[in-house]
Structures are given as C-alpha cells and as structure tokens.
Length: 283
Image (cartoon, rainbow, N blue to C red; front, side):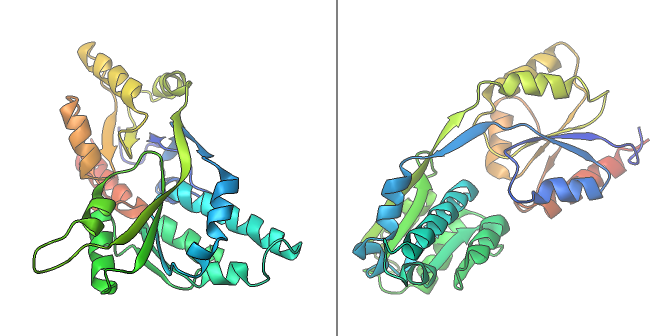
C-alpha cells in the first residue's frame, strides 16, 4: 500500500449540510469518504420552539443564547425561516426576526458558527476559538459580568453537563454562577436501526486498507462490538481515527486503541493526522 492509493474512510456521522467539510477535504486529499448515518434528529416540538422564540421573555428579556449542536442550529434556522414567513403573513410583528437576529449567540466549533452567521446573526462568539464546552463557558464568564443576566441554552434531549454545570456553579471569590440560566430542548435523537448493516457493507469493501472515524460514542455500540469481533478473528484491516479525547477514552475503555486523535475538532486537524500516519507507515 502507498499513500497514493485511494483509501475508503468511513465517517460515523450524519453529513453536514449544505456541504460537509470532512467530505470535501478528504476527497481533495485523495481519500474516498463514506458516511454512515448513526442517528435521526427530529424537532421535539417545533410549534413550541417557535412560540418560545417569539414570546416576550425571549424577545425582550434575553440577549444571550448558547447553541452548540449542529442539529440544533439547523432546526433553529428552520424555525426562524418559518417565523419570517409567518411575519410576512401578519402573524407576528414585522421586526420579530430582526429582534431575534440582534441577540448574541455563543457556539462551539466552526460549523455551527458558520451556520449562525449565514442565518443572519451579527454577533456570534466562540466558534473556532471555543472548541469545547469548557472553553466556551470560560469565554461566556469572561464576557458577561452580570451574573443576573438571562442566558438560554438551546439543546437536545441528550447533552453533556459541562456548560450548565460550569455556568451555574459558584467558584468562591471568583464567580457567583448565573442565576437566570435556563435550557430549552429543541430536538430529540434516536439511533437508526440500519447502522450495522450499512457498516458491514462498507467495511467489506475496504480491501485491506482504510479508516474508520469516530466523532462521538453515541450510536456506535454495535460498530464497536463488530470491530472487536474482527480483532478476535484476526481480521483487523482498518485504522481508527477520533475527533477528540472524549471519544478516544471511550474507544480505549472498549479495548480499541485509536491510531490518530485530531488535535482540534475540525476537518483540517483530522486530515493532517491521517496523512501524517499514512505517510509514516507507507511502504
């Protein structure tokens, strides 16, 4: 095998829309990326979300919001577009969308940052400068000095506790904790029932080389079980990549050691790590 061979890269994630940065960069670097959708995402209650975004408490009393999931951002965008159409029909005040877009949004990573900017938000903070919830929380604490400021966190039914815990837990002599922090659940997540069938189909086509990329533990239980079984049967013909330390720990706990760990949770870092590994191990 040489690094010039076009390797299959199984991406264990739903593709981002309208374009996926991992797919685009991997194709440009002569890899052949293939997605396996692990999860389905649905509005928990779209009508309720639209009502929340147009009520007085959000429009008048809330200046800051947090949104870290790309799926939440996409559903947020969908709701705002529908509110815009409702306003045209006279069902809301004319300036309701402008009021929403005037708020300050905090987000993690470049993908969610870009979507919020495209929606029309002018003041979006975090993004590439806040690659995880802990860093974003530190940024918020540094930015917003009044702990009585109202902040809403738009999230899914399943989420990590890092942001809520860090923003509401007092630190003696340093931080009192935000007293008006609230969460609003926008979407629900369910595992697909065809994951392992699609994975086995792609896995069988790898021809002795290729990558399997993990982005999150969620939805990967059967795939991990399948990979471990392959190892026991002496059939390991893939390399493992992960997008960050949390997923690395998950795989190690399941007796699977990643070959590369991206230094940052973005396509450039992951692709660089893969190329470096393939170059150093080429024959």
